[in-house]
Length: 103
Image 1 (cartoon, rainbow, N blue to C red):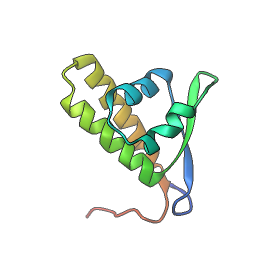
Image 2: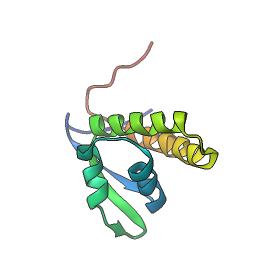
Image 3: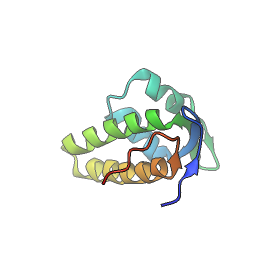
Image 4: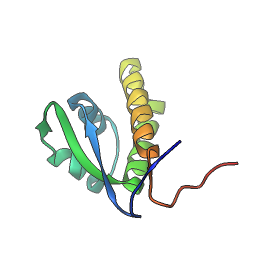
């Protein structure tokens, strides 16, 4: 898989649909620092555009996965898993030189 190279600690733009944003804000226990870009975002052409480092995005993925794994609401669980899969693909499309390839 070819990844776009970025500087270590560089930020990438991640687009969230309004429902995805609400899922994160209402259903995860992510830290205020991690939520701040989402809470401050505005809708542009139907999407919330937020800038995260790959480390921040990985941390956010952990919160999304944890909530998806523990959600009692099947609809919310399904939406969180779909969001996790999409955000993971976004994150894996970049390389800041810190990837650890599995054997």
